[in-house]
Image 1: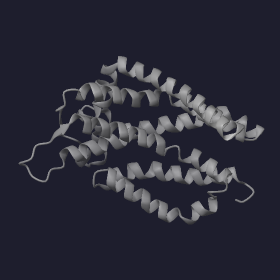
Image 2: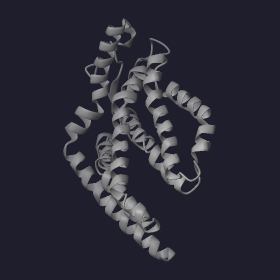
Image 3: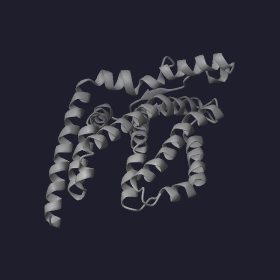
Image 4: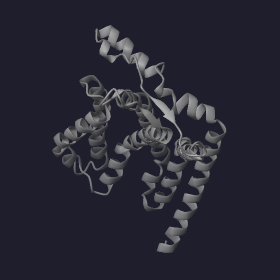
Length: 258
């Protein structure tokens, strides 16, 4: 195809992906109680399942410091249209999460003409694995990183004279961003596969920079988790495993150079 024909094809796939996202957003918008009360606002409650699991684990290993006894977190809205705007924005983000398999399908259909026949037959595997990794990452971000970050930031004070009155948008955008970011982060093996097919990434290079990557992962875990070793390990292990799995994926993508 010519350049203009590629643009036309891209426009077609973007429109179909956008329609899928809008449909998912409409569903999320209609069920606002589920989206906000049962999902996005749940981690600010001490009854959230992660806090209960951590407390049970702390009691089992004799470390009561894992129990969360207080969350100094009161949300407020200071803008007239703040809640309505946030409702629309987060519904769109939820729509993207709901429609991610359809979005990935459109991505695959766009790049498929440039692939070999054998590679095009892997469409189901690509969509299935990418979707699974995204949902795994989103789940990891929601149940692990989000509550750990909230309980640390909500209870962190520089002075007892200061009360945390958190802007609604700050809290909700933080939670939504963590969920989406983790979903994208877990796409690392898929990205590595395509980069390896293009010869940009090699398993030898990933092994060479393994120590640097581990340091980066540890630094990331230290930033987004409370300052205790246990929380950092919870975040570090899955991300490090993802990197090691990506080395294997890179090797499988270019067996002739591995």
